[in-house]
Length: 80
Image (tube, rainbow, N blue to C red; front, side, top):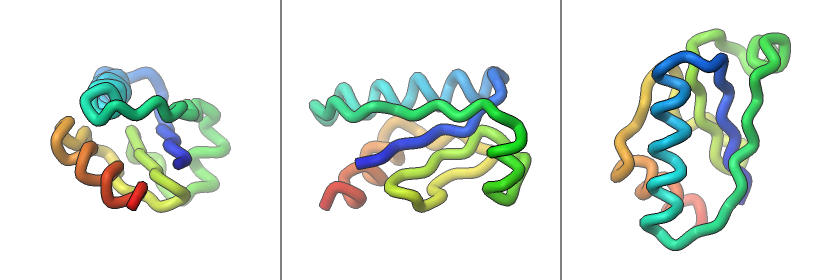
């Protein structure tokens, strides 16, 4: 499974990363999170509303921080 977060270091970005880590831990998963901070790469993805969460190449959240439970559901359905 490929998990990517597009972030710029804002409070929402940090909260998203924490929620993903917690969701992974609660699910017993050891997936790596690829952190993308390059503004040009973020622009290439089509939006500047960060944070952005991609799971397996699919944009799952933009400009918001899903709850740990929501992220767990996303991860479970993506691994499925």
